[in-house]
Length: 510
Length: 123
View 1 (cartoon, rainbow over the protein chains, first blue to last red):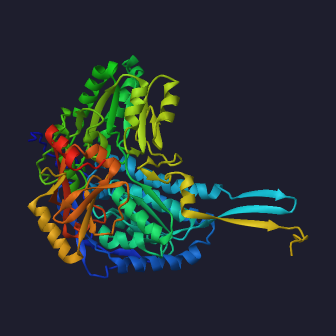
View 2 (view 1 turned 180 degrees about the vertical axis):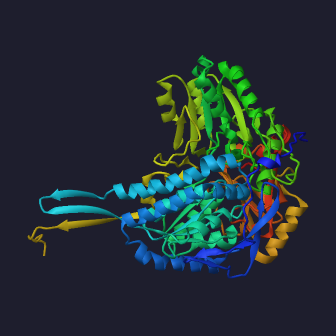
View 3 (view 1 turned 135 degrees about the vertical axis):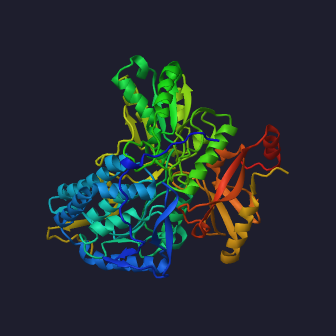
């Protein structure tokens, strides 16, 4: 049993905004009640209480949204890049002007600390809209001259109406990662937010809904099987983008195969964070940065696809390094996520909370040593029913299930290695390949090791940075497609090749 | 006989409720992020299993599958299908009911591992 308790200081808490009692779908530029007339409760993970309701969408609502998107596509797909760019810039500005408000809404919807929504989630939302507004102004098609009278021109054309299924861990940011490039590319979009976090995007739509022409961006809330499946399997959708887990990923690919449409998938990871011996050569600013780099497993309560959930440490520096990592982990301040000094908030849902506790149980059964944490975290002051877990470090080996499965909680598993080769072998011994971290003062290591790691993003002497302009996506079972970079535009477009002859001579065949 | 997958009474009761509405069912154990590491319940045949999947057994007549490579990391544990309150986020059939199938695990003894490798080899 956990003995940790805390009472939240109410005086410093960010004020809760007024929510509507229920939110409808946003379809064709209007708020539309669900065709079933039904709504479902949205529970805040902070206190386990219902704070609003969301529309319970179904196939009829999805169909209506897709039809609206198709109608809008007729004109949106032909708009000038400068026009779309300016609208994305307007959206970014509105988000920036309402940053504090949206940050509080996101914290209440998701449970993450206000410190992070203000400093990371919302600033990144703004920057990603601006980035995609920028790149579509600067990029060009290509042209090649095949011979004296033949020219080949490659032009980009938007792929059509896109279905996007959004996860609950960064509700607004993950929606932005998908919406911004799709709109920039000239596509129209139907979004299905996660059922755990259906509200913040609707609050965003209250602010930005009027900016875009009607039907360009449609949001339908609901449960996966009732709203997500009709979207993913619709023959009227030209592309599906999904972030989530492997079984649903496969199912969506199966539907896509029936419709012969492309998909992009981001399916998580079990990211290694490797600390080489030279890290501890001095107890200096860099050593301190590396310690923080290990403790970043607690960012967003560990609910990050690239959570650095496997800490691999050279055995020679284990004690010196891990003593400080444990000390820093124990110093993580928990409490009410609306308190600006709180560093770790609530897990996003009850079942997520239970799943993490199940993993702590299996880790202990497998013989993992609990270095710190290891249980739920109980709070007073009205937060008794929130979903809080202590930041936890487990020591074990890479064959344990806690080293192999994405716990998606504030749990990092620690193992040692003797050689660089062993570090690489352990790091790559996973089904996934999304992120990895390499920490070293050795100039050769910092180039050679990242190239040997099977992961789409290798952070070198840093971790958990997600700037626009650096592509993000997975190797192996972590999926495919590269977000947060202009290369994502091509996942929402096709290439029109015009092969032009301006010679007058016939071929002579017929 | 040792089983790789078993279910609680609550899970079986939920299976019956869903079967009444959706007909025969199947399960596929997920991996990866968000709702990963949770079992997914579908109408039988909705999810196309392939040569890379293994069937761990049946729960109340429903086949329970997992990717073979994932099974390699899971095979030393017995899976217990349970139900918890919650929402999940996937196409699993029970989610609209406000409950979620959930996997608990128990590490097999060496004797059980030896028995399973003889009687129910899956790899």
